[in-house]
Image (cartoon, helix red, strand yellow):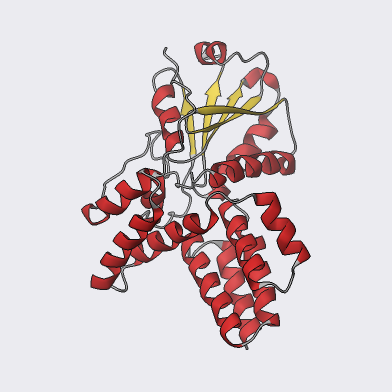
Length: 296
């Protein structure tokens, strides 16, 4: 088995457009795949589109509770990452190639880069926190594509829509301005195109958040609670980091404290973030109810 090459190249942004055009997640969809030597490389290649979390386990390790928690977290994340499970008893070559000394071991993979997460068992809350940090790193580097549901143990499929070819190409170059312009062209012809609307919202979010210092953004928001600019930037970061509920709560609180043009600007941004996260997401459903209460 040949391991993928782990390089220091820039993150691949092509997954963003694919995520924007992804269909709603079907009920009971799985984002967990069993990996062995036959599909290891292809699954690792998916990390150029979205984060991959690798669980190396053994049925002999008495850690089924951790496995159950990791599976539940991956499916609850609904495509924010893919959980790849490796049974080291059946696929020892992978464990040897990765230098695994003990199981369970959990590793993150972002654009081919390995990021050790933890070894041994953890509580569900602890595992969730570590994975959230991995997603934040991925988001800060523009890697916010969504994993496709796994069907029958197969990998992902991707049918490119030619309308988005120029926008996809611009995203691959990191040219957000051109990507936005391409989405605007599509929306000028089909103003209510849901795929284009979501795609544009995602690219706008990345353009606003590119190169920011997350700690500085959150610190400013904490020190300037009435600053619309500071709170909008913090909410953007929280959505990118996989914490949309916190971003939504932040903006709804701001709506309660503002009026006129400022309030409308916050409301519009909140609706854009709803589009990005997805209308069926529990955080969006709750935030929509809270927004109605705040407005009326």
